[in-house]
Amino acid sequence: MSNSKNHDVLIIGSGGAGLSLALKLADHTTHVAVLSKFALTSSSTYYAQGGISAVFDAEDSIESHIDDTLDAGAGLCNPDIVRLTVTHGKKSIEWLRSQGVVFTEEQNNSGEVQLHLNREGGHSHRRVVHSADATGKAVSLSLIERAQEHPNIELLEHHSVIELITAPTADNAADKKVVGAYVLDTQKNQVKTMTARVVVLATGGANMSYIYSTNPHSSTGDGIALAWRAGCRVSNMEFMQFHPTCLYHPEARSFLISEALRGEGGKLVLADGSSFMQHFDPRGELAPRDIVARAIDHEMKKRGIDCVYLDISHKSADFIREHFPTIYQQCLEYDIDITQQPIPVVPAAHYTCGGVLTDSYARTDIKNLYAVGEVACTGLHGANRMASNSLLECLVFAERASEDILLNLPHIKPVNTVPDWDESKVSDSDEEVVVSHNWNELRHFMWDYVGIVRTDKRLSRAMNRVELLKKEIAEYYGNFRVTSDLLELRNLVIVAELIIRCAQQRKESRGLHYTLDYPDLDTSQPPQNTILKP
Image (cartoon, rainbow, N blue to C red):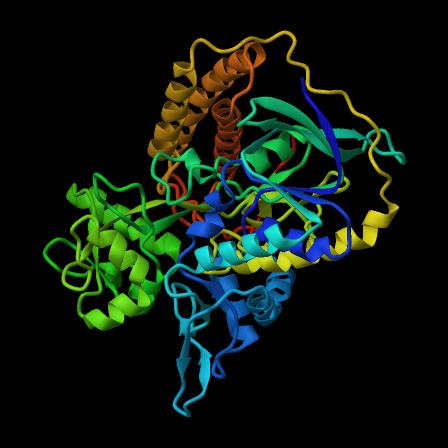
């Protein structure tokens, strides 16, 4: 039997975006609930290594950061959104410091202590604020601690959202407003009806659509699929960013090797020690991620090799251990001493540049429904996200969403009762293998056909398989009680379809979308964002 609970604001997701927003709201409203699909530390934020881009260097400038972001985005960034985000960089870092986040510092030539700044791909200056090489962990743990202390924030782990609940608006029956969500408490195996005056999607990306990913298991595109089924538009889903350098080892789960290694002089080399990036871009290892990932993919396919190597062993051992302690220790567990030998690396799915279409206040097409962080398509990233702009986006749009929510919340009436979840006609599954088999099949064909390099034929093959899987999954979903794995699979197949449909519409190569059938930019018209309507 399900139960019901009312909230002022229901935030779905416990990463940097969701927790930042909760903390910004909690002092001004009585009850904010934050749902985490697994543990609070299961978000992509927790695993983010590099840092947060912001202008602190006297030789840097807001205009330079804007120009770099626009260049990386390959003509599809919204310049107003880029300027909005970049100009809030310093303020966002100071807010995090006020929440207890400790960033790496250094002494300048005058003996003054200042933030240490890394430089990463696509950046023309050092502007990446970081906490050693585990920035996301430092941010996540500090925000979790603050949220746990706040009396107006309720943190609910192991809660998976099944569906958003919507209702007609008072002004126009054809328009929708969100009134809550049906939520599966996976520890109690109980479906709850959670009503709320405002709902926020902060669920992260969809990179588990691919068999190789740097992301935690939770990145299954849940918020994108929930919003799509509820009636929101999505945009630019073809732009899936593959991080160029992930640890390649048979016993290792995909472990990200931070771009900061290349920022500190790490070189990409072949097994014989010869470098190759200079043949693809004059910026070499510091070219944007799409260029570096395609270069590595090209070398691997051309030579029939399983990986390339990232070598920073020319730096002193003390420097490496001080700046990259997490990577050093992780590699050492697999008998790779990065102070003395190169790291075997391969590309892997890393970041979803598209998502639920939002405005500058994180509002979606559905009234009282917001989307912040990687789940959203704000216009900041365009066709390719520049390194370390993602956590910045989480912070800036959490702030923007909080301003709009607090402005409107007094005028939103508490939600009346809604129907409870009906599972009277379903039974427990006796064929869990269907879920695991379909999960693996989907992620394999997405990697093979909708990966770093695409063709019309590959996309068509992938779509045929998606259509078959959708039917199987719909039948399974209609007959059996929901589980966390089933909900993820149901969401993943929708996200896969959206990625393929967007990719099929783009008849050019731009940013992260590269197709052999249209290898050049389409210069016959202004750059167009891909927008899909349910």
